Amino acid sequence: MKKIIIALSLLATMATPSLADVKNGLDHLNKREFEQASKSFITAFEKGEADGAFYMARMLELGMGVKPDMKSAIALYIAGSEKGSASAKNRLGLLHIEGVGVLQDYAQGSKLICASAEAGDVNGLFNCGTLYDQGKGVEKDPKKAISYYQKAVAKGHIAAKNLLAVALFQGKHVNKDPVKALKLFEDTANLGNPVGLYSIAQAYLTGNGVKKDLVKAHAYFNLAASRQHPAAAGARIELEKSLKPADVLKAQQIAREWRPSKVKSDKK
Image 1 (tube, rainbow, N blue to C red):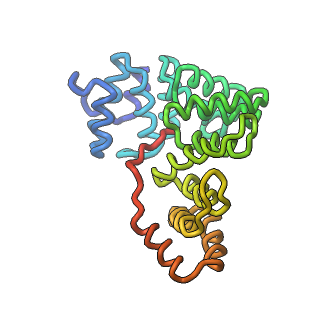
Image 2: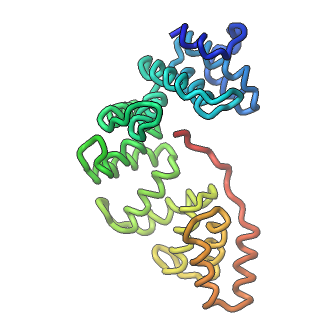
């Protein structure tokens, strides 16, 4: 593994012990201090922090402060996975599912992703759920998919909240609960998620789980459209036909004054 790391040509000198942990690496990464971050992640991995390999691999895959190098990134995902990084297992599993840089292999991909899920990785939980939902690499089991989504939701995963909310609205493989579904959509909408915003607009449009309010529906369609939801602009235009000009102005004011909560991004 040491030869692989050296071959990355990212370290002119060894990182000092003060940088030898993942947290410091992430602090440097957030400040766009890429060289210090890479040194910290690699030293962290060499000192036994398996996630150091995952974050270094992400830097290489995404070209953060360095020329993108998928081959070296995959080598680090493999190394991190073998040392127990749930995040590395999940990412390597996704690459196998997609067939990017490695053989497309649903069996191997699902094995890695669901192992990540069993280790409690939030993205692994969500991705394992989607595999059971689609029957990709595992036997299709929508109810099992829901159980994984619920675990991911408990850890705050945005896409899992949206998918679980859809299931709750429809009563699909789970007891129908429009009120709970709306709460989940509100959670993601408050973060500025376009799916959540669009779904809240639909709820106000139809009165499903909330009191019908066409002005608020227009406002949320407007917000979703501004975040490039593919159906929101058309829905807003159609709804505007049934609103008074004063109501449209009021809806636009609501959208203009709306502010999202602080967004926490999910890593893949």
